[in-house]
Image 1: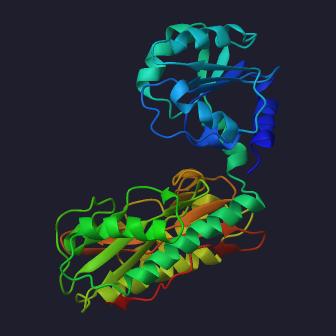
Image 2: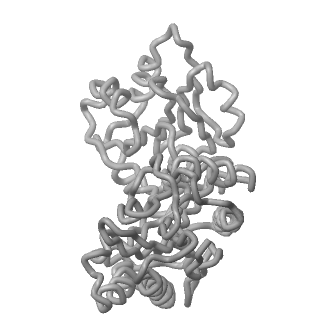
Image 3: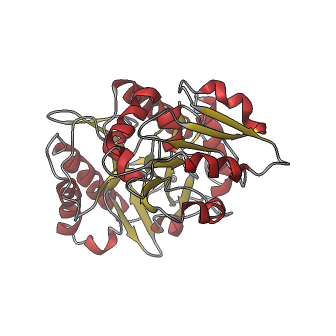
Length: 366
């Protein structure tokens, strides 16, 4: 990742439409500056980007050492302590904007309390989404970014392989989710991509179940959905297994989901519309009579964020480009019984899609 170059690309897109950008901690800040502070909470940590000069950094004194993590040459760096008002520095930084367009790019993930405090300072400007600009080039991954994502996927694969060696009966979903988080870090992850999901038995029919105290037992279907972060980049994998003995009919349902995954992966290439990937998987499931049980889009972009553009919905006519990375994750969910989902991370090449996640996709009874 090259923050200097990424910042230049953003600035080149600002000239005609925007007076500047106001960026707070999150994936855009990391992508554009190399700064990735954690747990800033209510403290103002911001970079103001101008189209015509070097950016300004406003940073809490607690995070002063983070300055060295950035390769960006700042015009000014304002370091403030807890006994100071950082919004005075922000007011000064905003006054330096030319204000020709009366339009600012605002970080989409900016916390509401920060935004409320700066509302009066931004009164003369209209606001636009920073993601609307950064997503244009964040969607296309560089070779270095793909290397990081391959490593994140490899960590996720190793974690699943380790799970297959575990004694799962009697453990709670919460215990297993915590164990997965530990395995991810033991295999090299800096963090998890999102909150790990373990859904067993009837809970697996809920696509976004939160782990509970339910204990795994024989004839349970279990969905593991988790991801690793490596050097800021995410993986996202889902695998479904049966405990000891598969419930009646579950092997057939599994094979349908597996076929939907396989057939949708087969058509991935540069130039295909995102909606066609969704349709390819959905048609398989609909033709088998389970259309109402496939409750979500077939996939989403992945990179610095676990969910980002492009989104693989039935309505998205965006053409997939070489270098885009996304998940494909068809599923069938039978309320009160079980659910099955299989998910891989895909890297788009010119004439095909390459799966970054490679762990076993066969129906496994543990």
